[in-house]
Image (cartoon, rainbow, N blue to C red; front, top):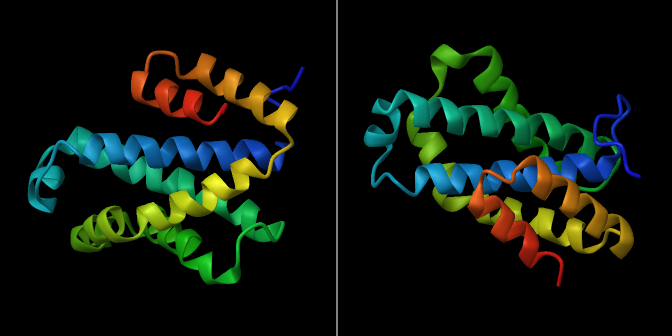
Amino acid sequence: MFDINKVDREIELFIFDIYIAILKIKEVSSDFNSVETLLYDFRSWDSVIREFEIIGEASKYLLRDGLIGTSNRRIVDFRNQITHEYFGIDQNIVWQIIHQKLDDIETIILDLINNIKNDLKLELIDSFIEDNKYLDFVVQSLNTLKK
């Protein structure tokens, strides 16, 4: 059985971490029609920022292992900025990334998921479904990856 809590995490876990973070950002941000309304809903804003931190942290391992190109280093740099310079986050950049860059990142991640050996991919999907069973939108999206 694949141990999702393993200290030295397998790279495939980081790929799924990014995918789920993208799904969460899209779900939360879809309730807002402007960056101001998102920003003023502190729970939603904090949620989006946290998921971007996860994307950036996991992406550094994908960069390290050569699974994504160095042009994607900006993802890690963005994570560093929002983590270490949280008082200087430009909400317009966050909004722009959500609406202009997130789909591109998702495409890269989906390509990586589709290149995982099928048995391992299915095992990981089931594990992440179990971990996220309370989030219907995540479960639904993960189930579509089984095909």
